[in-house]
Image 1 (tube, each protein chain N blue to C red):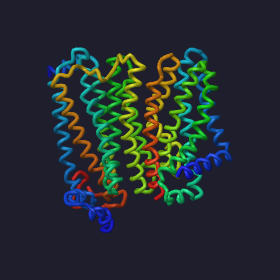
Image 2: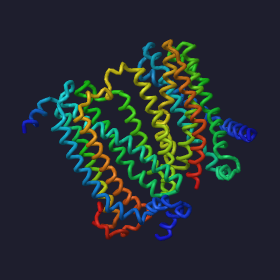
Image 3: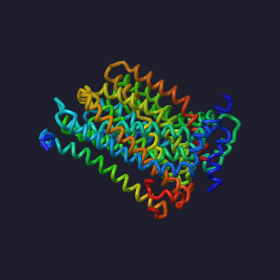
Image 4: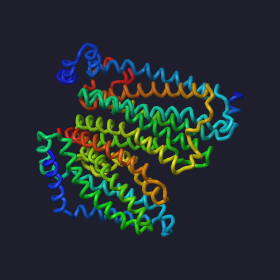
Length: 46
Length: 222
Length: 264
């Protein structure tokens, strides 16, 4: 885990984490929303 | 062909003149909006003078947007829009005539008023005149681009706001070049680059926008 | 349903050889099961490329001399920005197809892409802000690229607003297609004017275009992440267009029930 400590020691780790976190959260939300939309439209087909 | 063009322009202008209340309201909006900024920002003359071209351009842009909503509204309401669409003459040309008339009743008064309003901002007369020149070239472009938006949002509820939302991003280049010309003039720099860029925008939109607007009208009316 | 499929294929009668073969996919009945079968593969490809990209971006690429570790935001910021612009171009392409060939499926593809494009624009803006704050001490910079991204977001949202405002599906599709075309013609002009505005007003002291000098590994990481986003976009668009086909009544909900789940 040496590289992990090295990376987070550079400071500003929170910003990097936030940027990627926001991106994945938004894309994940899009996928979940799409799943709901498909279920609603395909009459309950799995 | 030119006779028809002139006839449409005259017809629309005289119609608008008969209901000059709405022309005066958009002019009034322009005056009020540009008076709001000093109240909000503060009376510091240097700051106001520096901001004047930008503020007046934004106010002109918003005033144009508001008045564009009624570009096709009257014809749409009384059914004469169908007649226009059935006409043997190229729809793009008829549309261009209507947009011309619209500019005469909204853009032209704005730029005539601008030197007066520029006094509020302490802009010297020479800069104010150049600012008016930029509006002279730029406001027709706003009317042309707005025409496309008016055609697409024809008859929709909340149409006026939606028109603004659609058209304002497309007008950003005109705003940048126009306000830039005014600011350059006031700083004593050469404003010709901005004015030529505005001219290029005008030439391009004169060619493309009537065609797009005509297509939009057919889409909205089918 | 068959009449509709025939109507969708009506232009095939006038098309020649290979054009006819491609136009066949303009038929919703042909396209839908294909989309259903392809989507899971694109999702899988996206995941693989994402893993590779993250590995290269965090493990392989070195620490930057000037910006330290924070520069690694580039591995999400630049791919998102590229995708946001690319998706808009593709939307414009589909819109042109829709207006010229009168194929409803083309404009539905454009509608399917729009939300994802808008999302990538938001991600580009957010990651840009999170990069700007530690690097230049400010959450927002009127940098030419970020400002263009902001205007692009307005264009996407305007497209989606117009679509939502028109009840009649055919009118909505054609109006949005025209809007996307007009917008795409405008994008180079907007980009040029914003660049021009930026160099004139700012000392251009801060700029996202002055990226850290690119080590080959950094470029590789960015490319992998971009490919991952591209695969993801295709997968999501394929699923979304299947939803749109059913929502607008072109296909019945039970169509293709043999294809099973939402992604396949």
